[in-house]
Length: 365
Ligand SMILES: *[C@@H]1O[C@H](CO)[C@@H](O)[C@H](O)[C@H]1NC(C)=O
Ligand SMILES: *[C@@H]1O[C@H](CO)[C@@H](O)[C@H](O)[C@H]1NC(C)=O
Ligand SMILES: *[C@@H]1O[C@H](CO)[C@@H](O)[C@H](O)[C@H]1NC(C)=O
Ligand SMILES: *[C@@H]1O[C@H](CO)[C@@H](O)[C@H](O)[C@H]1NC(C)=O
Image 1 (cartoon, rainbow, N blue to C red):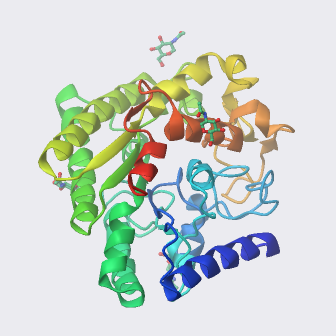
Image 2 (image 1 turned 60 degrees about the vertical axis):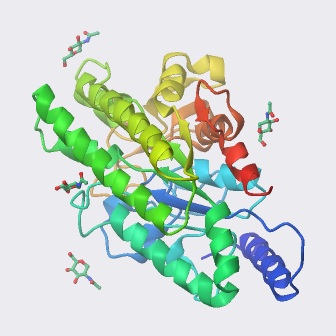
């Protein structure tokens, strides 16, 4: 389902890597990018699994702005990971499940819309975070066979691992209507989410991965779907409280891993603050609308009916998505570009201790 242009880009990238391996060429090898997580990072994985249309975005108007066809990405165009790949001079990184057996084009994308850190989050409908790790381990074995052990080890060790996982764990909790929680049970739940994230990070490390680009959690209470639910247009406070708790725990676990695991390096992107600033003050960042989605139905277009295929046929679509922060309940391409730039070379108050550009450069030394 690739356009001719993308196909050409992919083939060219593959050819150059292939040649450099075959000829034992001393040219610097590209630093690979491996992508894990949920719909923020899913570049079409869910087209290849047995899921429901709720977890798919492979229909109009998804993709309308950049690709001009639906790729499966939950946006009108590119995702944060696509911009990061571009800045790193890599081709678009394809879904792992789309890759042919002998194909390696500078990385792989394992992310699956709907996935959470907990395996029981939408179990059976998504590639869970743990399963994504298993797929990565499989790919690593294939790479070792093809490139030889030494070369494969280098690719794995120098690669950047871009991870976005957590929203769905909290959204399922909120939708199950377990609110109001006792603070102690909220902390327990967050602890479980962080525990499972830690397990996968340790798994990637064990497989040889060293450089982690962590996308923090947004102020999910201000997603159009949750803003709709409060009845007066304000953000759903409890969801933002959960997000804050999550971020505090995530940062402390990253620091701990850095201290415990030799060579573990990370970049943490403060998605919460970046999204909050744009929601509060859209015009400062070139947007007109920071609350309502471009595509969907109901108040704030918070119903996820964009495209009319998820049970509800009615939806509205804005004319100029670049003026909106949200496409559906996910960022527009324009917003993704801004977030990606902040991750790539933003100031240390938003992305640190390393930014993603620095993580890539570490591998080229
Ligand atoms: C896909 O899932 C549905 C519902 O869970 C099930 O009925 C169907 O048999 C599955 N199809 C395949 C090919 O596994
Ligand atoms: C940050 O990276 C972007 C994307 O490569 C680039 O356009 C921009 O000039 C960079 N900014 C700085 C300050 O280096
Ligand atoms: C991972 O999540 C499961 C629930 O899905 C939980 O029972 C388990 O304790 C968690 N693991 C860690 C290490 O926190
Ligand atoms: C909106 O409603 C919520 C309860 O659903 C309440 O906590 C909040 O204070 C209200 N906000 C405004 C601005 O009225």
